[in-house]
Length: 374
Figure 1 (cartoon, rainbow, N blue to C red):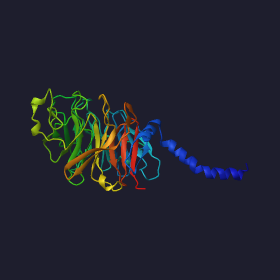
Figure 2: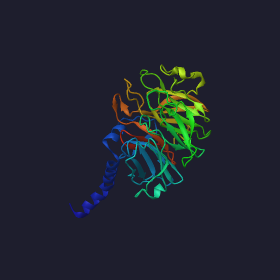
Figure 3: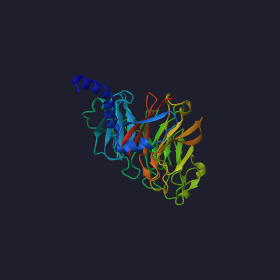
Figure 4: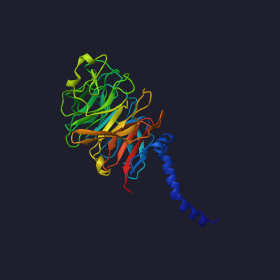
């Protein structure tokens, strides 16, 4: 074949080859399984944003577009390449040898990382990704218990950092635990905001009312279908949500039920499936999804670990009318097929362009969810 013909053939094939190479760069057997099996509402598309993020958990977005990702292992990642920019994502490990650094939050140029017993702050992080300086210790006096010790953290509308303290057990009466606490950005004025919360690994604030909404994981060993997991709202400080004496709306704990009255606790705004392990929760504040999704609560259900028939492994939506939850329904399903698990959703993040990121600690991936009417 003449050289000119070779060049012509290459010019015709090069876009196809480039597409194949690009696909290979962001594909893995684990994420392929998810994409092949996931079931989406009409008009939605799910793609892999980054698939080399082992044990990806909580997410926080920097002011310059860096995505920070915590894990329940020892590492924290930074991913450059904002979705939709056309740039290939670059994943960096920016911290290692930490103690379950699940929680990440970003404020005033600094990355806050929650280990089991301390909060760290990495100043000017986006300008030092190649050589990350030693962190400042914000607080190091949090409980050291690893059982429910991994944390989700976020800054509230009041400028305070909210930090949960999970119960160090399946169910027990430990007054210093089962709370959501808050503190100033420098770690001062640490106080309990809400009590009676077994283990929340996801919370957010309503875009209009600014009230705190949070998921809570129900206790184990009361059967396959009891008690429900929960979505709760705390319109003010000082409320008690029932743990360990009451679960769901009115299920008395067999061991600790005498410690309180279900009628006096703050009930969940919506009971969720039993053992679905709800983690990340976000209100959809973008405009690219259809109107019916706007300002509705979307939840990442990580999935059950010991239920005889698996539950969860999906995204759900709690539809609201005003302050009232009117439905609880599947949104995205197919992260498992029976006992075969392909992925486990953890956290959600709504981007400025209206798309949404979903972390998956089983496939070690971050997905991007988009919508197109055509």
